[in-house]
Image: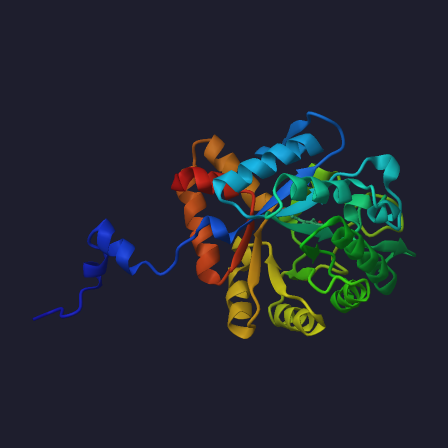
Length: 329
Ligand code: PBG
């Protein structure tokens, strides 16, 4: 009579596998990052992110409509700011007519129901490539948070549904929440990058926006004094809990694949939606391996997306969103 229990019965055919499958990824899970540049008719491929582009506003409009048609319902906007508009305090970030503000309006005009989230951090606007204001070799915390709050209000005024602070300053969620409330934006949400690690996987993103920290004396060369040490686990829970207490509606873990242990722990710990950012370096790795013929692109991509969802992601920010739609047909 051995064995009574045979687990393989539940794997015997595709039909039974479909019936008992625990995790499904759908178009509703995706948040699509988009890179926006000044100009007209621009759709330039990012060298370290094959088949991913910087778009001028006219092409952003087209892309928005295409994404919506494909069944994708949320975008996360990033802008590449011309060098001459960069300074230490990110002044351009507050320009009502700035590229981000125009990008928000462009998406909303093209597709009013498309959910718009915006990156809130100073790095694309900073002459030093830092997420905050630099002084005496330090990144100033409270002064930066004040600018981030103003920036958030400016994005809300332009029509953003959610602001997504990606900077990792202490206490910024509370300051942003209060500023939004004071200005009448009670309905604007906050998706906080709560457990964001100082990761080398952001390299291609910094190419895309030309936003890497500069190599100048007395300016930190990395972001380790504000982004988290990737050796730490308890700290991620503390950071996340604090952001929720300060008013975050959605929390995030970033990067994705190497940090799925953190995703699961946070998912078990909190009761707000958890987003995971599968970052630029993760995208680049798979594209490169597939180009060489070393990995099956679509199969590995699907496995990775399922793994992210299985770990506890409610929302997946991913450059693979359109590839995913293509694969599920
Ligand atoms: C900006 C920001 C970064 C990313 C998202 N927002 C870069 C950084 O913190 O240096 C990375 C996204 C990616 O690599 O795909 N603060």
